Figure 1 (cartoon, rainbow, N blue to C red):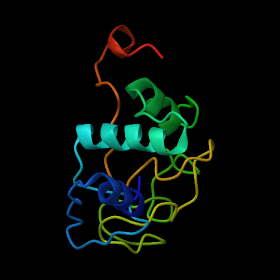
Figure 2: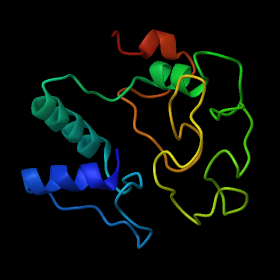
Figure 3: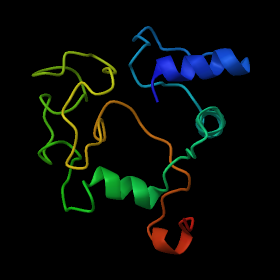
Length: 139
């Protein structure tokens, strides 16, 4: 979710807007939100749109991040990591943002998903465990 989307949620629900650390808002991914904040946003968005939104499970995230379960190390358009393909650890190439880049600044992975490697951390519905199949939520 972007700051633009999350800020609208905050305005409509009376929540306090999270700090952007001076890195920028708008189309940049929201930072400084808790797991509960992300869950509340998904619930609000579901009510607002009439569609169901939720956080992905760890298994769903891994599947999406690995471009449909492929054995790739990074979820970029090529499966490799470079500053031409993702925002991480400084700048270079197409990555001109010191911290967080606007959503969709780089090519999507093979599933059409953006920013699956680099940029910011993500929240999942459940938690990671070595034996995640035993503990993962049933969907």
